[in-house]
Amino acid sequence: MNYDYSLRGKCKKMSEEAVAADPSLRLVRGYYYCWEWGKQAHWWTVKEDGTIHDPTAAQFPSLGEGVYEEFDGWCECSECGLRIHEDDGIIGGNGNYIFCSGNCYGRFVGVY
Ligand SMILES: [Zn+2]
Image (cartoon, rainbow, N blue to C red; front, side, top):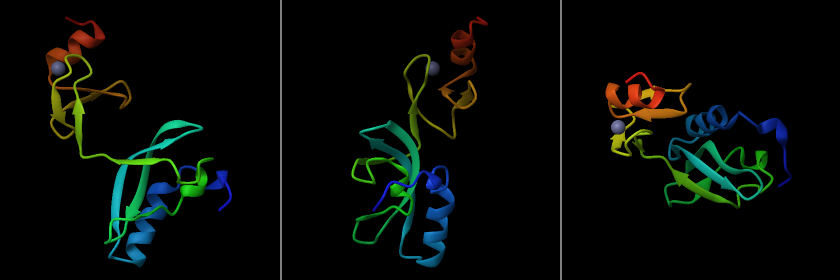
């Protein structure tokens, strides 16, 4: 497998296509830890036996040999550190931050 920059940004689309072609695959969202680029938001698929099938692994210089970490939807409030589910939080800062409450959001941006 050779590094292929043209795959960059296509991980969600190509993973969805892989699942459409082979319904035994499970679509996974999470983070990939590339030793060149560090933590990357990423999509891939997992086979029934638990092995990773990543259609766009070649977009990373580490070619999919880094660490895959599934995102389970749980985050920490960017202000107070409370563990919250993303569906319950308030997203701020162009999606870079999440808050447990309006109070925390306000404190973070300096309104209160
Ligand atoms: Zn909070």
